[in-house]
Image (tube, rainbow, N blue to C red):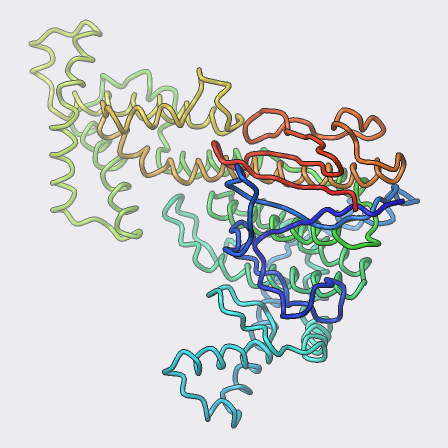
Length: 528
């Protein structure tokens, strides 16, 4: 049976010179978690491919027996009721202490003392020394800090972490939830989530550990490590006390890092077929929707008060001014000022701007509802503007929340938040609502895209393993995805709701897909 050449190129650290076999003792350190989606400048992408370009080697393989001999999910019977946060915190502290000890050993060394770190050469050598002492692949630049790393140095690092950090992460993976409410004060879009970035360190360690195990042919150990990493990312996604967009996006990024290790494993010559294991993985869309709703509605708590909406035009002058100040201006200014309270002068200035910008269309709204000129003139500017602004906010919120649960393609023109947002930019009609939407749109759009890309990546992994199975059984590449009748194969890209473009040219099969609209990505499969 011929071997399939399924080259997979993704943004990972540059390989060490002269090392082409990914299964050698030390090919490269752990994959850089921060640069998976970028394409290295030396990669020659085919004409027409403007996005991600994947190429890697696989071997045809039938399904394992028993089916879940290899798995990447934690079984329900393994789970223990409890909070994983103390265990993750303990693992992070152990990891940080080990890093500090390694850094200190470098800074005390005679080699470091002789460096002139004010020069580029000296600065680069400093990073190499630090990396050799603690080989967690850096994310701060493109330089090759890995040069000179030996197998012994990498083995020593992972042996140390295996005895101290990994047992804590493994135990935490079996807990039922993570609650870090004592670390984060939830304040909606103004929540300070900088400490959440610390958790990326642990997933970078787990990705590096899996990479090291894969390169040394320890596939069982690598799958256990990936299982721990996926459980960690799921807990970040579903963390308590409540979901929030940034936390959700960080959890999604952590999961993507571990998915890339599954691609790396599939590239190994004798890797097991993980199709049954991948079918056990699920993506909970409710988590994503809850995060979008909880964060956006935190900004606008009145949104769910039905009685309030029935009495918009009955607000007193004081109530209407409070709506303008509290629901729009203060929150908007706090977001712009990094969660710092706005000054009275700024509030007064923005209040005036809101009323001036919205007064005429707000007055027109009242006229259309049957109010006379005299009735309108008897009202304060706040009573005229506040209901108009609130209705605009609700219309946009409704569209945004519904759109968040839909695919990103252009097939649903009746509910298209991107088009609505573009129209608002070109022709603003409701200043308060438009300003609030400009604040919320980037995060909600990122959340929607993140959800669909997660689904897409899992789809592609399943397709790869299904092709490996088909090639093992039939001795050739499938002519189409429909030809794989023995297994359920995803055929529609969740990002654009269009079919994956699969074709065979000679001894090469290609899958074209889109990660973002109007950008083509590709996987190439070649029979060697």
